[in-house]
Image 1 (cartoon, rainbow over the protein chains, first blue to last red):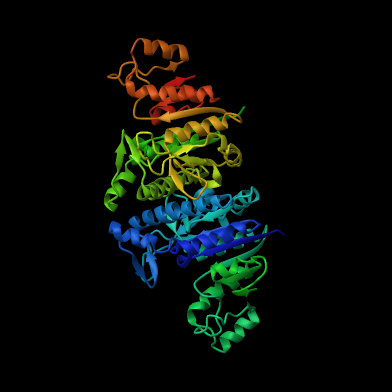
Image 2 (cartoon, chains in turn red, green):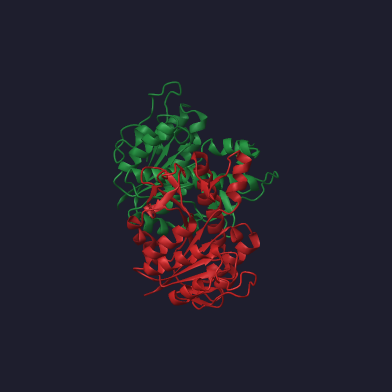
Length: 264
Length: 264
């Protein structure tokens, strides 16, 4: 099967003009079907502050009220998405910027109020069974590089806010039927570190056996466990491999593995 | 040739939730390839006011400085575009929301400073020779209804603000090689009125001969002349016909002409 890259970048790249430019330069060079998923970094929070839209969090998760879904639709789906598309076009990368509502790519369900009474507001949980991999394939096969904002919709006219990591893994899983998918999570560290204090201690390869051993030895810091669990969940659902590390390391030689942690 | 509709709506529809919902209902019913071009109405101005971004005009044209291009990219390309897409999806119309930067659909040139020294800022004049009709055709042939924000790009990484009427006519002309194009301008009047005081005096048909006679008789109010001139310009460049009038009249029986002014 043809290789396809699903690459997620976070705030540490989006909020830094030079890092973003360097990343997009590397992304444009990838000579294979590719999908970029971006968040909005701090831009939404800063704009919200100016507009008097308070950023509310419960247990570290943003509460998306009516003003906030409009805010992130503007920032993620408009400002950030189109700036990335325009920059990629200048690099001769024929990008198309979309949200999960466009071409009905990512139908979602508004998250119900929890048993504890927490209402996350306009947050969408991906309806994986309805995800339109065929629409993504049509665009990718036409030579278009898809730039996806982490927004979905409920099919009833409402945009929804969805975690960008989840969008990336859902897309990667759905495309695994047609492509050999490498899912790449760019974050602020050089990979899964064996020693949190040492940036150069990235573990090059994690298999299920190695993961079990690392957990048994209590070597991994807590924050990284959900990322690795999500990676194995994607792999169990068909994704060929997951690569985790810093943006500027991972795309240099994207079909091989130069740095970062490969999970397979 | 297959019929295709290019339909432009303005602020009088976008700023009125009920009118917009009614329009989108009619739009979704059109059983043919269709492209919707929307502006941002007063939403950009209102948001700009909140953010302290002054709306500056020279001779009735908005000056698009750095803050303003970000503002309209958010509002046109994000908020308004995605709300329309989500609503169309709820009406079983498989919409895809784009700007002229996406898939490089509408390359443009930043307007040079005029001889009089007026700098319109980040305003784009459509580079018609480079317009990607084939990308629009690919999407339309895949059953997607295209929702287009009036934004273009300069190919060097910069988004540009472009008049929505111009985007509509440029798209209509470019698609005329592949489709029998009806270009529809929805505005606040019921058509080209023979008597400006009488909303029910819409002239049903304007040909070149009729237009000349109406001008000779000084029957038309000044504001409508550029619209008719633009319509004939599009027709001279291949568009089959142009229909002008109120949104709720024009889409009821869109392949025929129930109301409004048909120019051909």
